[in-house]
Image (cartoon, rainbow, N blue to C red; front, side, top):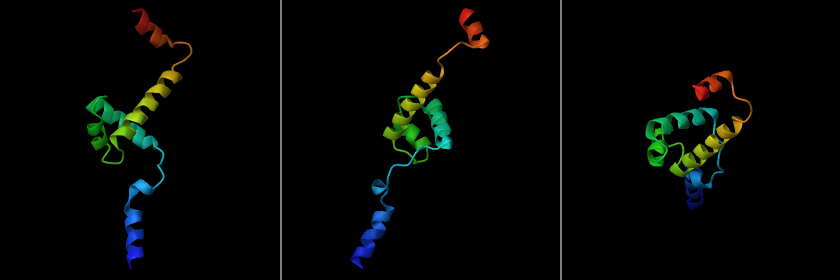
Length: 87
């Protein structure tokens, strides 16, 4: 009986599970949460994620998203970007 109870508790313990990847839906939710809560209050951002991610996970993912967006902006400017820059 004791061993079966241990196995049940172990199944409920999320810390023993392998980390799962972020979904595109979670990325969108994270972006909205950061817009609403700001880039400095990761506890609120995590709460806005409905408890799906810890504050440190949100911060780490946000840094990765920002880095990817910066890297994706390499190359020639669009005519609209030129207009904004040269006005």
